[in-house]
View 1 (cartoon, helix red, strand yellow):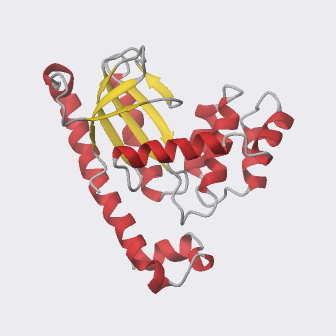
View 2: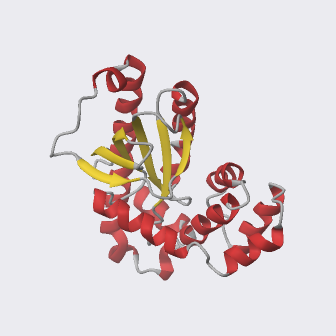
Length: 227
C-alpha cells in the first residue's frame, strides 16, 4: 500500500510503470525508516552529551568533505556538525523537520547544522524547489521559503514557487522570478548532489555527522543515511 501511495501521490506515471519503479520506491521507503532511527539515535546522543564530550580526533577511516555552499544554522563556529541532505518533495524529509528544529533550538550553541540539496529523480519538481530556495536565500529569505516548501510538498510548480516568494514578502519578486526561470542555481544543486553522492548519500533525508573546521569548511565523520 505504501508503494502504491508513493507512486500515485508523486505522479510518477510519467516516469514509468509501478512495476518498473517498484525497486526504487522500496529503497526510498527503507531509507526513510533507517534515517528516522538513526536521527533518533543522534538526538539521544546529543541529549546525553556523548557526541560533544566524547568525539575523538578523526581516523583515516572517517569520510572527509566540505560544507561548501551549505545553508548554516546553529553555532557556525562549533567543532561538531550535523549536515542534512534533503528533498523538498520527500514526505519523510518534511516530517523530520520538526525533530531537526528541536535539535537546532536545543543545541544551537554547541552544534553547527548545515543543509544541502539532494532532489531525487522521481520527485517531479524537487529540482525547481531547491533552486527556488537558493533564489530566496539570495534575498535573505531562505528560512521562510524553506518552511513553506516542506509544508506544501505537493504544490511546487513554478507558479506555486513564485507565489510563495510573494507570500514571504521577498524584497524583489521580479529578481526572484528571473533567478528561478533562468535556473541560476542549477549548478549549485548539481554540486550538492555530486558531493552528497561522494559522501555516500543515496536517498533522503541523509545526514552526515562529524567534526567541523569552521575556517576551512572541512568536515570529517560518518553518514547516518542508513543506506
